[in-house]
Image (cartoon, rainbow, N blue to C red):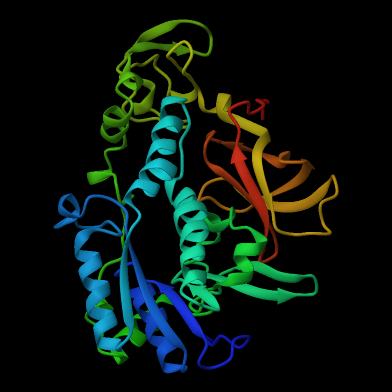
Length: 370
């Protein structure tokens, strides 16, 4: 396994997106060692003062300081860019809108798609860079038809699910030096360079969601989203009341506050009527998953009826499916029913290790019995 970038000449300028964590820090160190002209860029994505002291989140105030110290240790130029307004508009606002519409969004995908891989790529080009490198665990492979996106060599660290919306033009400019390495080796690299972040814990929370309280963030951004409504059984009976659909997600079992003597799950959310519909596990079964805003990376393999594997949540298993595409929309027909398919999550499409593309799971998910 190699972390070398073989398609760029030694001495070329590479901008590294430095979050202050061990992965991006090790990326910068490796590229310095390989003889590239490395420039570190750290994004301030929300209020610096409010971020100081936060633990378990990326891009917080302490992380900016950590990135600065790593850059000093490596002897590279380092810039902190204020992207707070862009981040609020492109990531936080869409996050709040999605929850208010009964979806379960993935803000990290939107952050990669917009603030990082759209805006930061433009900044890197303005700095005269030949590439933008990140610490993501994913591989960029040159295939017969050009650049391809592949899963990381270390399956336990693979982040390809969060990068499905990367465009082909962005992928041409991006580099992922850690995609072939296990996490343990990354920490060893940071330790070898004497970087203080070598043992720093990985970020766990969404950076702008303190203590995992999604509903509190949504209530602040969309005050009307927490209106109460009925909890209704799929059979039609009203079982109780809730304090806002933003507190629920498809497949949720705990914390419903109602009971019928059988295990109940959230089957769907109806923002128009403010109803939370619950039912038995079998009511969650889905065979057809409707996709919107499909980003397709595999030119030449767009035909109907493509046999693929799909991942419907970042931590879920790969599922065999038949894919049908029509412009920016599509449908994945699963070979076996899946339970808890949530609108707003992503359906990422794979063939072997290659990421073919993906799309957002649309609210009009077809329901079929198992």
